[in-house]
Length: 362
Image (cartoon, rainbow, N blue to C red):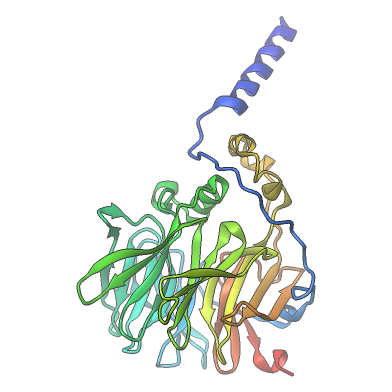
């Protein structure tokens, strides 16, 4: 009887692993071979010099932007947009955006644009008034607004990380991102909001988790991080190639998250975690990815907690690769570069990492 009972349990477990419904419908793909941390990504500990700045109740500061007032504005997990005074290190609530604000970008008039994962594209005036600009495209709801870039003419470009999996349904952007990357069906896209007529349109589609976005200083092109493919796209806005796109950096050693404009033509990219060998191995095996989704969390390998950001040029040249293998500031989403510092945004706790440029450019 005991043997039969044990056998029955194993049969049920086997059936569960093979047939229990999961929300993803995985697509086979062949990841490029992970070269690891080799040149230009050779291991270093330059981020180990970063110091911690306490942001109080502002947890998981996903993105930050510098205002014309010299203060740093921060997207917090609880829906708050915080304002950080770099001189006295004070932190206050600037606005209640609600939902989960992710990407932040100021326009030339001092308005703050917010890619809100739950709510869509928002605008916050200099006085802190929150307005919803758009939450749909072609009659369909925008499920996962992720990052935003604003052109001088007022045109707003933003990513919809996944048109299938949104954090409203999963209650967590990270959980939604895992579903989309595991499915790998090209659900991500880049959207454009035209303030002159209030229309939202699709600029790029078919991306595996469309994440960070930035516009070049001359506004000739956009750069877009495709997290699930470990690569960065360039989409041309002007010139003979307007409307065309090309990959400028491929086979990254980690998952690219935000991309932010730096100084002197730099773009900063956060590699939120290193690549997972198991996930790469499962790329051509969609059925096994379904099996993995049925496993309890404790049986799924956790991401390594390291710290890694890179600076690139508009042609994809890697200008800097800054790391801390010990992961002093793990799950880095990106970098805000000011005249004297690099501020490290993250999905880990309620701290900024700050790296003084004097510690970097010596």
